[in-house]
Image (cartoon, rainbow, N blue to C red; front, side, top):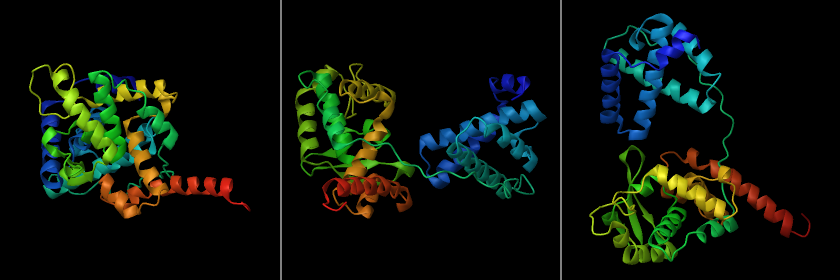
Length: 311
């Protein structure tokens, strides 16, 4: 990227461009119900593109043509993963389609753009022994350790996204029914069974630690901090990294999402139906869930090689 473009990338967007991007994101939220994180990613992609356009050509996104998109992709592809490039193309297509429908442009400059090839993605997971070691790490003799134990048990028992976990409120969990209600991506609601072990730890946390941590303050969140607020994604990320180190697991190999992967993989390894796993994870398309079958197949081959007399 040229020096002028680097400087522009740090400068604020013109008010008119900011208003344009805000209106676009509002339209997406109203029409498609996209999550806050997805909308933020789309807006971020368009903001970087807008700054680059202004520095390189002195134009705004609504004036971009196919040649400008190709030029940006040539630079963007040098520092971005194929998955990020595909998201950028998705952002552009939605943005320019909205402009076309509003009559602000005569043709869609994304029509002849081809998405980059993406290699098969195999998510990182943990073995069942590693999960056991991780679950044994929190000190349940303290209120915060009991909270962390309940969080990790619940995450592994349900396969929730970390944003879904930290966003849980007390009234969304029914220990009597052994299930919780979660609002997932695209504001889609689903019921997820908790399981006996996670239910027991969650009950202990609510009985013995939740009130102690809040110290008389009020908070609707299920998992709370000593500040009297809901646990954040960033804080839970740091906790998982710390407990992984204590369990002898490389912190590079783990994140809260790794336990979601372990949840799905271990279910399949123990014979769960792929459609059931899809429903539990809240995937809209079963093709997203199928990435876990590769891990499960590899595990089955390994077990076959170890235990079959003629393997």
